[in-house]
Length: 360
Image (cartoon, rainbow, N blue to C red; front, side):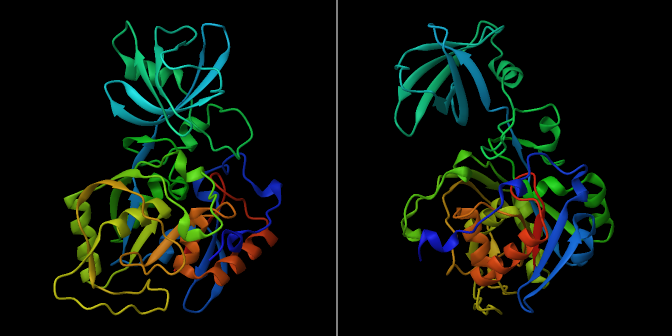
């Protein structure tokens, strides 16, 4: 399986630079795997595709203000992108430009008492330590930082991004990229599903900058995923397992929720696997979700057999990306590329602020 197998041509004007006027007004392509049928709807109709005994699993991570602009002692501008908190006011970061910055060098920030010292400089990983006479570093980081828009959104951050590049159910801070399939939901849609008897459950995966990292190996199997922190609570696991045992479907909202569920899938005691499709994404009760927390670098690409996820809501993804590979694993590369061709023909909006696809 080659990286080039997952390439496609996308007109640049279809890359959404702004969100839709309202969250629920995004378009939604509906792809049925069993019948290979493609239909077109609006996201406001999402609830109609979820039955009473199903469960919708959402990622409640919250995007932090991860992009900071500072200055060297020489006056030169420096961008610091927070990747991961590692304790004691220390973060793994990206620094740009990094060429002349040396270990132990101090970076300051305009109109702030906050300072950053570069502790470790590596080609792939830097560590900085923040300090401040205010003794409230978390608050200063929030005030100084900007929402980290993806690199393919070619504009500066605007006030609207603080709201729209965040899900309405975002709760646990730690992500440096949004779980974008969840951006379409409104409080009203969530309440509507709950009133119909559909169960909702929340897991956490702190999406990091690695979601935009290009695959550099021509052989897909040689790619190594960045690890991301996740958590599945006892309550969430119990809800999901009850639905699975009752024969309901598990809807994963986004590739992030999907990867968490598949990471935490364990074989049920005494169960035998009976997947109902060749893709392995059938209605088997052979597996259950285990409550866990930790880090996952699970890489899902065609050939993977899904254990927990029965339906997937996802945005349209970048060519040759690991996200696109996951979607192809779930629905089959040929069918997914057919859907993408139709989405391009119908001028769907792509990537983080774009439209979405529901795979049943």
